[in-house]
Length: 239
Image (cartoon, rainbow, N blue to C red; front, side):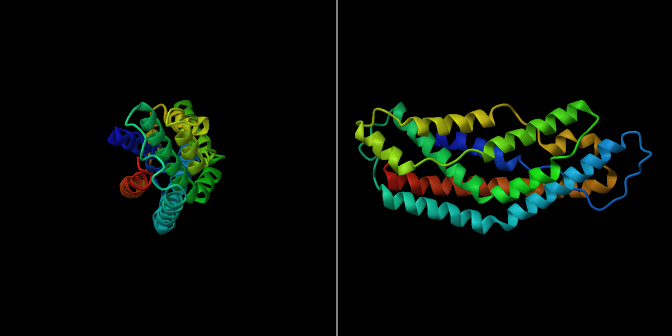
């Protein structure tokens, strides 16, 4: 049950931050305006520049992200230790566990909000004449914007409220947070590197490989932070 909940959250994280910005970056290269699809080449070039900048920033932000998660775990552990220790191992507890995990994800998201907002600003004015690419990139950025609007809930308040009902009723905002995370992550969002693949110039291919590597490394790091933090958090909360 717990491993399944962690799996759900790791999938959410992969959608939100492993895939997000996990595309391609281009170096400084001239694009001939006489090219029939020059609009798509230019937009792709600029998208990729924004992606590499975001991924590099996220890589440098690793210590800040980890510190934010540690503070969250420490604060919650101090405020409501062992609050769920007497709860039965049933579906309600599983729902609470998923809500706790979702709240932890919001902390990770918050730690990188500025990087994500800069990325969205950088790509906000880009357009492709290829409507399939345009729709896919729009969906990708819309999903990221929605994710940035998700906020933490008063976790210990909700957990104590759950305990006060004899562990029968899960507070609505805790359920809502988990549901919102799932809703935002619904639908397989294709990474930008795949979406714009046919518009990647030869001079961008090395950068594309670099971005895939950075995205993979970041995804693994975030998943590791989640697993470790959830283990500590649930142990402290008695879940």
